[in-house]
Length: 447
Image 1 (cartoon, one colour):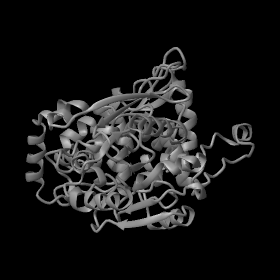
Image 2 (spheres, rainbow, N blue to C red):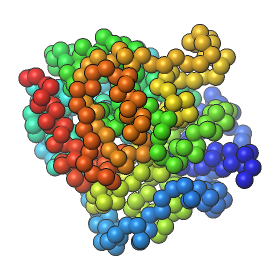
Image 3 (cartoon, one colour):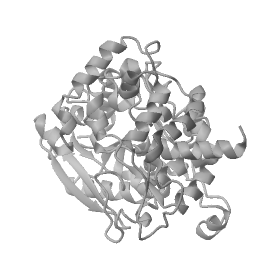
Image 4 (tube, rainbow, N blue to C red):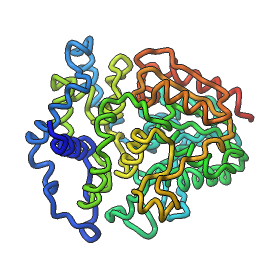
């Protein structure tokens, strides 16, 4: 296949799998061939079929007990939790809940939630890309880490990054305008997380908190702790659930395939005003059925395209809860977040956003973006790693360990198939994740 054809295939696929949204008729020109991307599902399904060779196919042969699991999935659709929001879920299961708001220095308005325990040690939970605070509780009271920590007596706070469904407001720029979405995990680390940490500590009267991050919740933390080292003194322990920092050996076949073409994608996305990532059901259904074999496995195992990026572990899938998870995830992100991650894959470095040589010279004073100074991360770090996490690798973890000076705990999840999303959604999360989190918190968090 010619390179130009490959590029077009990848670009089309990116628009499909992520459901890239065009923003703001008043701010950005929209005359282009992507205007009606949803109107020709069959065409785009044909475009992605060649990618089957690099992605796993879930079907009756690869998913044991498929019929039973699918029945559980269908039963889960009737669960009323599918229709409840964050506060309604917490209230339903007998926990108190508070809603808090904080404004960043660049005027993004962020929503935080809290399961309060006055005068108790504070634990702050930060979600990943395309996620929200909801993902810490959708696995239910027995498994959801937010509930588990509250039961242990911690004051639990849930952060939400700019651009997700809970934090879609800026005092100057509406989300309908492309300028709202000019951020990556860099701004989340520089502005969002520090603002939420400061607010949490001020509200609770505590000097330190325990930080637990998953995926982008780790990436953004290491941005903050690198460029604002004073925040290390506010962290009693940083528990890293999948260190998405160095990514040159990322094992996601889809990420490996698309990363080299992100420069072209960035130009096209900007020219047509595509800034927000938000799935489109009709197109995603067509794509997932192409990758996942039968309609049952497509609906159950690959209902959203991110599984194609980060992997799916049917053995740990709580199929009766999947409909609840799907009703809360994905929660929205910016295109620039995805582009910044892909830059990390290509460069092999953990560094600032690459704006192109000319703009880099203006912004950074160098033709290439500078690395984040990870040697500044001095707070205690507990690192969780799993073999089947497609967004990390042993090689990249070794690089991380060479750069971050104070890794005090290293936990290798003792489950060969444990993947990137299992930290949140696994049916055995109590055994493989929560038990170790509890041990670490007890060791490093003072009353």
